[in-house]
Length: 458
Image (cartoon, rainbow, N blue to C red; front, side, top):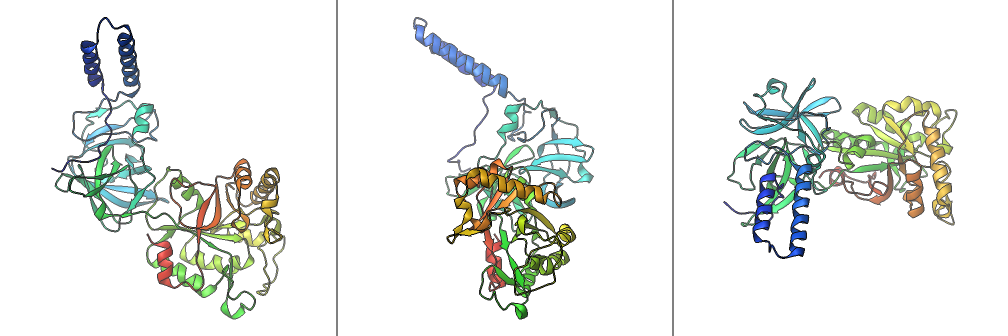
């Protein structure tokens, strides 16, 4: 069997500590005062470390772990599965098949009134109801703070599955198979390994075990695309904004969104994105985000019905000082903004977040935000948040006017209570990114469906 060049860290158990102490005592020069002091210090450290880190694992080969977010009061048990057991991941109230754990595998699970759960990625997954009651627990653990942090992924990398893949008990193609992961799974990587034959492996945590994925079976996750749009017009009525990158055609927008839907892609909310970037929840691989800047009337007139028909959701970053009290007649030759009634009507599709109150202006052809003090920016963002709370009590996200920001702006939006802020820098987002400097991607009217795929697909 090939030996790994990189090995996973092992926990020092009490027996190992005792053996180390005995060897230290045997090799220590009795007449050396300083040696005695050093030895006592080492023994004290080992004793303290083990009093905090000791976890009673059952006598099995699997490296059993406890998920890092497990509540201290929870009771997690080691169980031996009696059958091949499907795993389900809950996404928006629906259970998606995300894999299977094979018969006779030792797993760490918790029984609740909703079912039996296992640690899965950044969150949890549920075992199939038919097999929700495995054999009697082999062992019960007392969850400690040390154990809770031990299974946190050590990288910000994830992989994506495009087909069902095998999970191996060792980084060896000939080792036993622990289970499988299904297609359309996005999963965090704990470590990347290379064996002596040059084969690459991804180490992951699943159901209290360290298991391995052959890197040839998966794709490294490039991140989630956050799309940005501004203005939408019919080609026949677009007389003033042809060639303007921030204006897209109704036909192009409709075709692009319908194409992504046909490929199985779903939209996620900024709340879901935030939890994912914070490593607090799982997301499927085929997801993306839609955002609109400014809050233009055209977005309500054309974008809203298209997205509603596709059951897609989007975020509108509103310039709150430009919200209209009364709904105006449609005038495609001018930039009109949404009214109170239009905002209310589209709440089933649009989530409204801040694009500032008075800061969406230019001064000497530069964003005025650069000319404002940190306190003025903070006050403006707070004012915008207050204006939006009549439609949405949870206003935590922000898009910089013209995508412009500096240190003052970063400090100001954070002080105003903003959790995520978006620029116009091109790129995708993933865990580890600065949440106040997130990138986005433009889709243009001229983008073919193949270009759309390049911008969205992994």
